[in-house]
Structure formats: C-alpha cells, structure tokens
Amino acid sequence: MLTVSILGATGSIGASTVDLLAQHKDRFRVGSLVGGRDAAGLAKLARELNASFAAVADESAGPALAEALSGSGISNGAGEGAVLEAVSRDADIVVAAVSGAAGLKPTHAALRLGRTIALANKESLVCAGDAFMRDAKCYNATLLPVDSEHNALAQALGGGPIADVAKMTITASGGPFRTWTRERIQAASAAEAAKHPTWSMGMKINIDSASLMNKGLELIEAHHLFAIGHDRLDVIVHPQSIVHGLITWRDGAVTAGLAMPDMRVPIAHCLGLGDRLTIERGRGLDLAATGSLTFEPADETRFPCLKIARAALAGGGAAPTVMNAANEIAVAAFIRGAISFYGIAEVVERACEHFAPVFGAAPADVEEALAIDAEVRVWSEQALPETRAA
Ligand code: NDP
Ligand code: MG
Image (tube, rainbow, N blue to C red; front, side, top):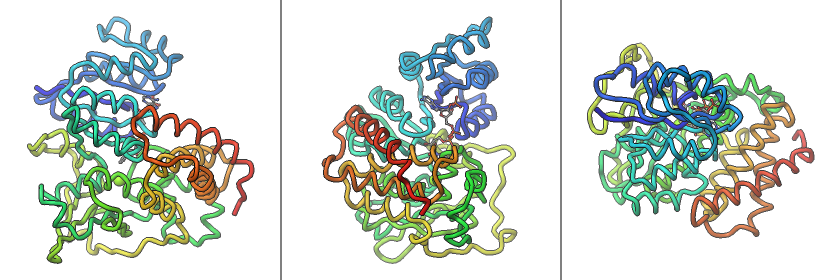
C-alpha cells in the first residue's frame, strides 16, 4: 500500500485525485489532506477517505474543522504549523495542488523531505524554479509533472536526451475567447472568462487560460522541469485539447502525448509510479469520433499575456516571480470586477517594467521568492486604480 497526501485536496485537482484514490483503494491509503479554508469540504473528504490527518491553512477555519471531525479519530489542525505538520507526516506520494504562490512553502517542505511529488502547483516553478530544481536534486526528491502538457511531454520524451530535442511544443485550447475580437474580449466578464471550452478547473487557472497567461506559466514550468532553453519551447493552439505536448527530435521525428482532456489521466500517470492505473468512467480517446484535430498559431496581439510571459522567461532572473505575483493580484481584481480583461495584462506588464531594475537574479530560495512576491503584490494592488480600461 502506498500512502498519498494531498495539498489542495478540496480543489479541482484534489477532486480528480480523490476520485482515483477511491477507485484504487487496494493500492493507496490516504495520509494527510490539506485545504485552504473549506473546513466542511475537507472534513467530508477526510472521513470518506479515512485520512490520518487534516489541516486547513486558514486559522479561523480550525474550529469548524475540529467540530466536523469530532468523533472520527482523525487528527486535525489549522494554520501554517498544521499545514507543515501535514506535510511532515509520512507519505510515498505528495500531490501538490494548492493554487497560486500559496503552494510554494508546503510544496517545498515536501521537497526538503525527499518526497515523490506529483506537482500540479506550477507557480512553485514559475516563482522559484531554480531553487526548486536545485533543492529537488539536493534532497533527493522526485518531481512528477501533473500539468497535462508537461505530463504528455514527459511521456513523449520517454527518457530520451534533451540534447536530441529540437523543440518542445505545448498546446493551448485557446480558451473561451479564441475566436473573439479584441473589442469583445475587452468587455468580457469574469463569468465569460471562466467558461473553459474543454477543461474543468479552478477559477484562477480558468482566467489564466482565457488570457493565455496559463500557457506562459507553462513555458516557464517546462523550462525548469526539462532544463530546456526558451528558444526551444513553443506554444500552438489546438482547440480540441487532445494532443497535449509534442517533442520534435533533431532528425525531424515528432513524438506526442495524446489523451482526452481529463486531468485524471496525468494524475494517474504520476500516482502509478511506472504502473498504469485503470480509470473507471474515463472517456477513452476515439479519434474517428473526434474527426479532426486542428492547430493554429497563438495570437499574441489579442492575448498579450503570452508575450509578456515569453519575455519574462527569456529575461530570466526574478522576472517570472514578479510576473506571477502581479498576475495573481490582477486576476483577483478582474474576478471582483475592479479591472477589465486587458487590465490584467496591463498591470502585469507595468509591474514587470517597474521591478526590472530592482530585482535582478533569480530568487536563491523560497523565502526570497516569497519576499519578492509580497512586495510585488502590494505594488500591484496600488497600481490597479491607475489601470486604464485599455
Ligand atoms: P482550485 O482553486 O480548484 O483549488 C485550490 C486548492 O488549494 C483548494 O483545495 C484550496 O482550498 C487550496 N488552498 C488555497 N489556498 C491555500 C493555502 N494558503 N494553503 C493550503 N491550501 C490552499 O485550483 P485547481 O485545483 O484548479 O489548481 C491547483 C493547482 O494546480 C494550480 O497551481 C493550478 O495551476 C494547477 N493545475 C490545475 C489544473 C486543473 O485542471 N485544475 C491543470 C493543471 C495544473 P479551499 O478550497 O479550502 O480554499
Ligand atoms: Mg496545463
């Protein structure tokens, strides 16, 4: 039996993971479950899966969690200390699926313990990729990519040498605004931006998918995971979301990873640790029924966030850390209706310009990344009112 802990158990990736664990009870037992503030949701999962420990990050949700778990025998706690205790408990696999920069500390704590980490929290690599990859090696931790594009790339790579890769390409569905004009996108609401055409995901990543910032974050994620330069990384729009990643080898051969758009597929690949797990109620890929797979270039004019992210990746240093923090603030502001859709790109671009001369080298460790993150957040909040409805 393998013990699996989930950081971000109450979220979208958490739900897909829980579904797989419930389908393979003979193979997995559940260790710790961590959530943000949804005490009732976390307690329900902990009871159903017979977890050994449950923690909520938000201190104020602690009493509700304790109450909901009373009589269950499941230990629980609240606050950062409890989250770190959850991570420190024994686990063969830790699924790191907290959303945003909030995932850095708990994910890094698991890494320092030398755990095998199924990594969904791409922000860990965007904000502190150099430190994460260095420390993974140093503490003998294993990072398995959950993100569907990176999981497909890893499978298509099949252990082949990166030196033989001419190009790695990740696909984008194009999001809900793929065919919209700039004027229509400018006036889009958060509800419209959150209507993803092919994937079912959490709110933040939905908005990032609509702006194509998600692809930008994923280019940076791929750069760190596969130790490949930005000049060999590419994005292509593929509305059917069936081909997720492609490796173009130096002889012109291409290997690709295909699957239906269902996050359980890459999660199962990670949880299997080399074995293939059956997915009950999975939607098998039927190419004849799909009919055609189409591809088109990504439009960086209507989707400037992709261009900004490419520049941050090429520029390196602290630029991705700055970009991510500004993006989190801008996306939250867009969701609450404080700025327009293109206001997101504008805040992020201004933050990158403002901080470029201030922050130079890539953060040396998670603490430095979080310090930069905190400073950029404060600046970006203040920049919001000046954001034009461009
Ligand atoms: P959700 O918003 O659905 O879930 C986020 C999870 O994180 C929830 O369990 C939430 O708890 C928890 N959380 C929030 N803040 C904290 C905190 N401070 N400490 C501990 N836990 C916290 O996000 P997704 O599942 O969509 O995404 C999670 C990560 O996976 C993101 O980094 C995303 O980019 C990545 N990813 C997601 C994909 C998807 O298909 N959804 C695909 C590829 C990558 P609570 O509910 O209690 O607030
Ligand atoms: Mg992805």
